[in-house]
Image (cartoon, rainbow, N blue to C red; front, side, top):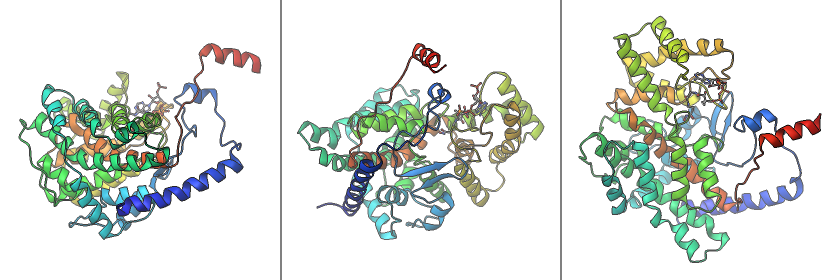
Length: 437
Ligand code: HAX
């Protein structure tokens, strides 16, 4: 029998697929934008070329998940187990079926993920075979790929699955994969930084709280931070590098394990998810260099100028789409204001927020001088004792699974084809321009 979330998804997906087919039949020739040479050479900024149902990003307002902003999620998503923050279970439900779940729904989903959470032995063996100083993102990517043999999609495809059933197998893989990630991610943390002293999962805890528990941090405020963290990092429309990579790989009908791992390899770059590691490394380096954990704004400004003069970017600042402070930055600031009183590193983050934007603006080329999500997350983690910044992108990656895997269910349900845009050579561009002239 179909579980309640899967049944709901099937109803919604089949209705939207029918609507999409009718829309394309009538308006398939309608132009939705023009591409300039600057966009062709400039990383396709702003080019509309895919559909992503689970969230949408506005340059000024920031992210909306199925139409809801982060403050609205805080208000509307139900909470269980004494949580004071929105919970990832609720966001996944909302992204997948476009409905705010009830408390009962998320209690069911939490239990369902706990039920599916067993990690195959081979994954632990693969991790144990790696040198302990292997970067946590490398370990994470390898751990995900090591589970690929369990893919329901791959198995059913090999058995001759009909196109009509792709969504069903994708849903099964998505649910299993999400369920398993906290265990794997916590295992990587404990083997890398805590002599392999692992903590058994607690199936009575919700998804994010169990992850916090297995990391070994029991402060109840940290459980709430993890619920918030894994909610706000989950999705950022489809054009960002990790989501787009996962989407591209999945469009070849590579299974959700391979596709999500591809997305994680993309998240591991310093211009994207690795920026959360880079931010705190940069701040730690600053306080060490200055010999104080309470630097003045003038000292910070000089350090920023030195970073720029060395030909480096200021991590945690700037964005390819946003043109205002990232609401995910603001949500973390609000959390810190509420839960954390007078923490040196948090205070440094806030001072940097005052200092950096005018400096970046003065360069005259930076399109968005404001902080992004990564500018704040590290300081919160340091506060609760998670100081090993090499690990931070794994936390981001665990959360990002929720968005990219929900979106994969939609892509397969709507029968999205192989993604295959067109490239040109510079020779072609020159000839094209000559002809235009
Ligand atoms: N510090 C210094 N220079 C910056 C900058 C920053 N934070 N942000 C942009 N610039 C520079 C660019 O390097 C580029 O310089 P060149 O012309 O010399 O190459 C110029 O300003 C124009 O860039 P842009 O159009 O404003 O920005 P892009 O869309 O090209 O890039 C980035 C967006 C996020 C990659 C960029 O702002 C950056 O490198 N930021 C720092 C790294 C970072 O925080 N990344 C995380 C982003 C959010 C995310 O994905 N999280 O996971």
